[in-house]
Image 1 (cartoon, helix red, strand yellow):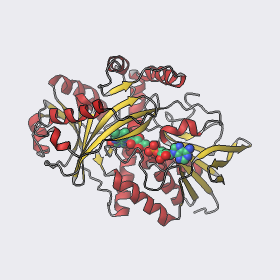
Image 2 (image 1 turned 90 degrees about the vertical axis):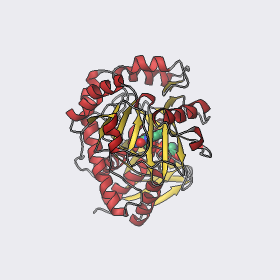
Image 3 (image 1 turned 90 degrees about the horizontal axis):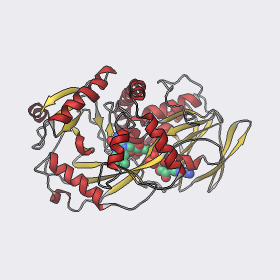
Image 4 (image 1 turned 120 degrees about the horizontal axis):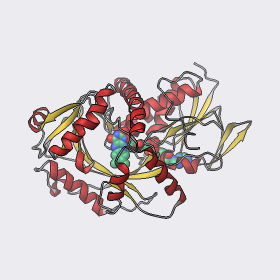
Length: 420
Ligand SMILES: Cc1cc2nc3c(=O)[nH]c(=O)nc-3n(C[C@H](O)[C@H](O)[C@H](O)COP(=O)(O)OP(=O)(O)OC[C@H]3O[C@@H](n4cnc5c(N)ncnc54)[C@H](O)[C@@H]3O)c2cc1C
């Protein structure tokens, strides 16, 4: 324990909370700065809650450029980039396209597998520590495939890739899938089953973490935004906030999709786009599932969360635009009925659509590590579809780096300066 060191964590989303937890465990005196009020929404809250080592394929994968161009013509598609003249978006799009190669997948998959598996282990520890108040469940996840063509493609593609990096994937027939998940009738050709995957209830995880941090003595500055920085001798010395300056030995950048604007002025290059996603929660579902499932062709996620059932998905790259698009909500409901014919539009009655902004880096990998220009500023952002899954390991790594320890996982692909 070294209680003389101090750190400021910027952002009270899941990455900020997990970073603060592991830093406090290292003996740092922590101030967490969050511009929203305590208990306000963040991207984790309405997410699918997957802790998913199955996601070893980064979002920027071979074929995505062509697929993305086709999808761009329809605002109803699962992945939509709203065309607009914006230099940051153009650069992000170019870097994204450049990453959609087999070589990128080959290099990224083992690294993602290592981070995801280590993070899942940390979730088990957190569940034990909190008495599992956040409903962590380890029943696995299905990629449900409507057609035999998709099943064959995923069996040869994602399942083979996952198995090659130590994440077990089994190809199942429709009958075998129904035996493992008898919750509701399914109209599918089969599935890929990932027994190691898990899920949790994010709306319970976030307050559980805040309570843990309070026990650790973490100081919270809710309703306080970081507006700038002070530096000296190549180090960050202060975060300038709407409520004064905060000096510290180390700083963690965990402000999600707003991270590029948070570090404006520090001359860093952090290409990122907000990837808006939606979810709908059925509070009293007629059907009870044990396992979570991705409705593969529609890119919709289904999660049984406690007594509720959540469907979510879509990736809309249209900036921080708070408009709710009804056609996107309609697509999620339609997907649910398509795969589970007994689930009808009426099952969603009364449910309020939620949306959040995933922080999406162009190569689908997080920004995790020191900035070369300011080595006491650690990036823990850009986790895109994997922010829940990777929050504990990223938080642990942020703490290890500020404590001067060897990081627990391979950071060779997550350098925050990689696009500088
Ligand atoms: C529909 C949907 C489903 C998803 N499902 C999954 C899933 O199943 N599994 C998974 O792993 N991931 C999932 N994700 C992704 C995951 O939710 C995100 O990657 C993760 O929540 C991002 O967390 P964050 O802490 O980085 O960002 P955020 O939650 O956005 O938190 C950043 C915080 O920083 C604050 N902030 C910003 N700027 C400042 C500033 N200048 N000063 C102070 N505070 C500031 C913001 O107010 C915000 O609270 C999903 C996302 C969506 C949208």
